[in-house]
Amino acid sequence: MLTKRIIPCLDIKDGRTVKGTNFIDLRDAGDPVELGALYAKQGADELVFLDITATHEKRKTLSELVNKIAHHINIPFTVGGGISSVEDVYILLQNGADKISVNTSAFKRPELIRELEKDFGSQCVVLAIDTKQEEDGEWYVYLNGGRVKTDIKCFDWAKQGVDLGAGEILLTSMDHDGTKAGFALEITKLLAENLSVPVIASGGGGKTEHFKDVFNKANADAALAASIFHFKEIDIPELKQYLHLQHINVRL
Amino acid sequence: MKLVIIKYNAGNIQSVLYALERIGASALVTDDTEEIGKADKIIFPGVGEASSAMKYLTERKLDKVICNLQQPVLGICLGMQLMCSYSEENNTPCLNIFNETVKHFTAPPQSGIKVPQIGWNNIYHLKTNVFQEIKENSFAYFVHGYYANLGEHTIATTHYIQPYSAALHKKNFYGVQFHPEKSADIGEQILKNFLTL
Image 1 (cartoon, rainbow over the protein chains, first blue to last red):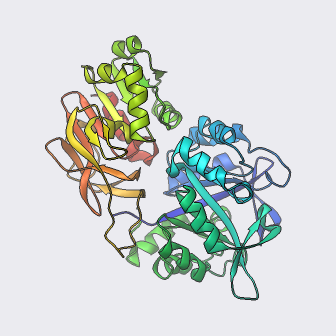
Image 2: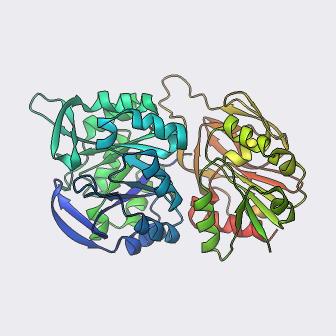
Image 3: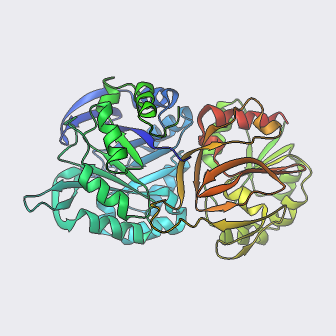
């Protein structure tokens, strides 16, 4: 039986793993190569590596770092941050990435998703969406690491992304990110139950119960978290053991 | 031992190379028919689309070369599917090493089951030395929208929508639908087992 996935995310700035609250106030969380290898050993199901400064400072993801990490881990590995062309993706795959994630650049030029799907297959293309619930109760897409609001609803963009060829959706709720108060169940459920591709829930995982809820109540296919793993607040083997006892199918 | 990875227009070659490196092996990546013929063992990887991959192989006469290999060959994911007789993916005639048709997963309406399958799933009813020391129901990493049925060549089974072939074997040819290069320690053991066949 296909399992639910637990995915540690390594947010990278200047070659170090960092983590902030609500997308600001970054704290150092260690060497990404060491962390990546440790998580793989502990039973993480995949890794996500996001160069969070890439779009902002118009830098390309550090492919050398990706290469170093890829040598040390034996589980699937997604890389994102500043990817805006087929050429960018080619370089990352050459350095050992299995999938790539696109965010702002795909929103600005949706055709990018189709181009990537055509050259590398949809299994390779993860559409990352940062979203926030506004006063009207609707969830909207945000760009540039959460700095720029758009008028497009999260579900509409996710649906369009899947139609263009995205193979997975990585959904981050900016309202929940870094709060450790639980995942955004409502919007995760809307996407997970209405899209034909897997949805990775991100933002807000702080306790083991939150992971149970995002799988049981929101039907997420995978859950992603960063700081709670980096700062050893939740240990991956313990989390998976807990989920197993809650009758959620995980890889032990 | 001379190990060759067949180079063609399908991804994941780099991941396979790194996985081999982690278990202390090195491989030559080539589409040169002579080099492939001289190898002791051959890995036929692949992530991609069937018809364009078959076109690439046929244009370089690699299709005939692969079918005539006498050495152990390991097809991975699309590599395994191309070793079957036919793929529903763009109605593609394949290498016909395994007498199986590759079909598209069809999720029952309202089931909420996603296609392609992405993630970790159990492998069971394990046969042959490729699965030596691998426990029944071990987890392997899968990414695929098409599958081969169970049949006479099945040496491992997985269940997604229905039971299907997670691995196939005939004479010197082995194929795995999952990605051993991304299946943690289990995957590395399977690669080691192939290298010591």
